[in-house]
Length: 144
Length: 395
Image (tube, rainbow over all chains, first blue to last red):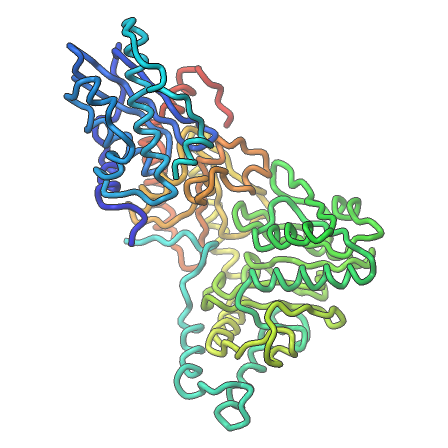
């Protein structure tokens, strides 16, 4: 069996929503280059709905595919719906990831949350701080 | 089109190797320990292969032990030399930071048993000098083990000089020559090598076969107990087809060594020159004292696994020292040993050529690689920070 599913390869080779949004309503960056993965997510939000989303990723094939899939999953959703998305859902949509790559899906979930947190902070919206726990590369790997 | 540029990982078998294996799977399938004709024919073949390999290395046939590969040979050589040293109260072992894991993990095991392991730094270029070895040797040093050439970054070590130092100090010298055998001149007597490991599948031979050369007078410790094969030092019915394929492949490689070196190193230099044009890139390893087929670069702002997958999609088989390709969080210990920061080490690419690669293939690699690097950089937030001056370029 190949390392990645056809869906992962498709989202890696033909990534959807790659790029940057000018004047985004929320930006989130997670991961760190030392660990080999950084994801940056840009959101355009209007009336509590994510109208546009773009991503930039430094990382392996599954990191790029996970972030691209995550952008598709939250586009057109409300902020609350986007916040409810879990790494497991990202993995399922990708048709699975190898065990040692699951942390890529965790980073995708975290990048959505980080961008929404930034949106909340910028707009003075109250939120439950526990929703946005800080993680680093060692912790994210422990999800595996 | 498939361009295979991962010959340091493994090579395609040669027709010579395959043709020399086939009779030992069909007609001469006997067990060399059997007394009947078919067994004795296999035994004759085994001994002829031992002679062939010995001739290629410049030693006696009785100094050749067939193993399952380079890793087993490394393990047995190091453990044997360590146990011999221990008997004499010598428990200091010298090696380098950028050895293969077959060596490093064996040394780790010995360290837990009370041996003192000293790993010499390899500097920015990735090499050690005979002087470093000489300075590190103590009265209780029982073994110096260094690779002949590095598998990742291609640096070729000054083996003859190291061998000479070890000989004058009376210390056993083992070299992991897995990347060198069949590609660089080896003469264990001239180069003062006491023990040497090699692996068949790195020079167009079959997988699962290797050699430990051990100079007469060094008692070997068994890793595998059982029958009396390999002078009682390595039990188990001999892998005759594998050994015959290996011997034929090694002979062919050694016969063509200069011609192949010239051809492959020309392609290597063309690749290095072309890839150097990619901005914010750097060659890893020795620029001159280098394996003929090894090209290893770091490209800042991208990650190696994604680079490999996109190269693969374009038909190019390569490898990388990124963490994502190793299954661990850390990138290659070799790239870290030569001082590459984690961020940069993640963006490494190794292309390893053989005499069957062509100039057209090199031209194609040089066309495709810069495009892929640029594509990945364009979606990399790290690259953007570097370009916008938020972070400083390291390369």
